[in-house]
Structures are given as C-alpha cells and as structure tokens.
Length: 255
Ligand code: CO8
Image 1: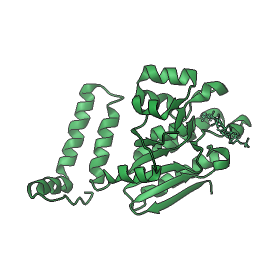
Image 2: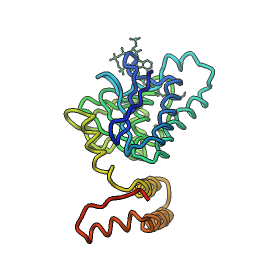
Image 3: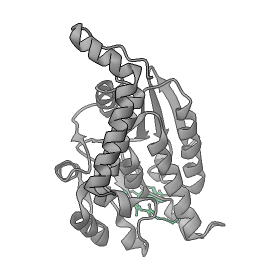
Image 4: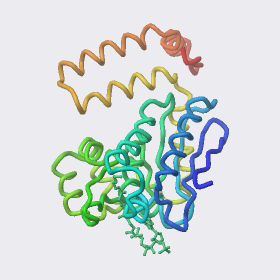
C-alpha cells in the first residue's frame, strides 16, 4: 500500500509510503489519502499526524510522469480531486499535523499547508515549483500559501518556483516550528498540547480563526461571537470553568 494508516494511542498516523518516487502523489494515491481521511473521521483518535516514508522526502508533489501521460482525467478534474481530498482535512473532527522531513514540493507542500499545523525537520525544503513544469499549483497552493505567508511572499515563491528551506519557512510562518531530533516524537508532543481539550471547542476555534483570512473584520467578529456563544453553552465550558474554581484539571467530554 502506498498510503498506510495506523493508530498510535490517541493519534492516527498516515504515512505516504512510496519512497522510491519520493512519495509522489499519483491520482490513485490521492484517492487513497481521501479514503484514509474518511476513516480517520470515524477513528477514536484526538489528532492526525501525516508523514512521508524514507529519509529524503515528505512528498515530492503530484506524480509528474503520470501527469505527463495525460491520463483519463483532464487537468481540471485532477486539480479538483487534489483540492477536494486536501479539503477533507478542514472537515475532520481532529487537528492534523504535517511532519515534514526532506522535500515537500508542489502537491507535497500543498498537503502540508492544508494541515492544521506543520513541523519541519532542519533538512525540510518546501517549494511550489510548478511554473518550472509549465503548470501552476493546482491542489490549493495559490490559496493557502498567501493565507499563511501573505500575498507578496506567496507570489514571489510561486512565480520563481524557488526552494524555501526550513529556517526561512519558520521565519515566514509557513511552518509552526523547526524541530531537531525525532520528528514523530515532536508530532506527539505538539498533539499532546491540545488533545485533552474539548474537540467541539477546538473546532469552533479553528473555524473562527480560518475565517479571518477571507472575511471582513465585522463579519469575522460576528462569526466569533456566534461560535464563542456555542462554546459557552456546552457542558465542556461548565466543566472547564468549574475546574478552574475547584483548582483541578478539567475533564472534558466533547460535548
Ligand atoms: N513525480 C514522479 N516521480 C518523481 C517525482 C514526482 N513529483 N519526484 C521525484 N520522482 C522520482 C524521480 O523520477 C526518481 O525516480 P527514478 O529513480 O525512477 O528516476 C525518484 O523519484 C528519485 O528522485 P530524484 O532522482 O529526482 O531525486 P533527487 O534527490 O535527485 O531530486 C527532487 C529530488 C529535487 C525532489 C526532484 O526529484 C524533483 O525535482 N522532483 C519533482 C518535484 C516537483 O516538481 N514537484 C511538483 C510536481 S507538480 C505538482 O505537485 C502539482 C501540479 C498541479 C497539477 C494539477 C493538475 C492535475
């Protein structure tokens, strides 16, 4: 299988497992990733970690050899497949963390950008080099990169197709952190910082924050008011505030 989904305690771990092609995304692999995301939605887990097999790449992007053969799908259908699969991450009940070691190019960068968080090894190299192939990013890169790093930087990165190394990626906000040592362990640690909180509350927070990039301040504040009121009405909010007063750790029940 080129995509492995396993459970490690309260974490789901999805591994792109095609190291001989630097985990490049064929259309079949994209479909398999989509199916894996659907499974994660029904697993008893609190976060999803996404990693690439081998020590050279997280994912070198769309499978160029397959794209070049112009398979049954036209370009639009191919882009829509990639976009719809990565968009599933937004609808998962749990947060996703991309663990990027080595290359994350094209669709690989786009997959990482669709995750809730990104951790990079010091050897990580990001890039949207599609212009070098006579293409432009098609799996969400033109929309997610500007939201993360701003339009000016995104245009420069996409128009030049240049590499963005780990240290720069952290500086411009493309990754949350560069971590030395075991990336999987770092993934577990960052997940451990939020997995004990209420899932619906975390989801309200995500929904409010992600709307900040595409709406007016006024509309965004209204969304925030609605979602924070929904959170306030949950039993988990009662529990969280009671735990504060009683000087104990809150035990949330996701409701
Ligand atoms: N697709 C297919 N095969 C790949 C890919 C890829 N993206 N990347 C690497 N491979 C294969 C190589 O062909 C090679 O296979 P083989 O041994 O059979 O020749 C093997 O993986 C190892 O790769 P290299 O020998 O090239 O390894 P290097 O260490 O020399 O170089 C690089 C590593 C720099 C990552 C290099 O492989 C590279 O530049 N890869 C391509 C990166 C790229 O351009 N990615 C963007 C692809 S386009 C995209 O993602 C979105 C397109 C939008 C499409 C929307 C419409 C459908």
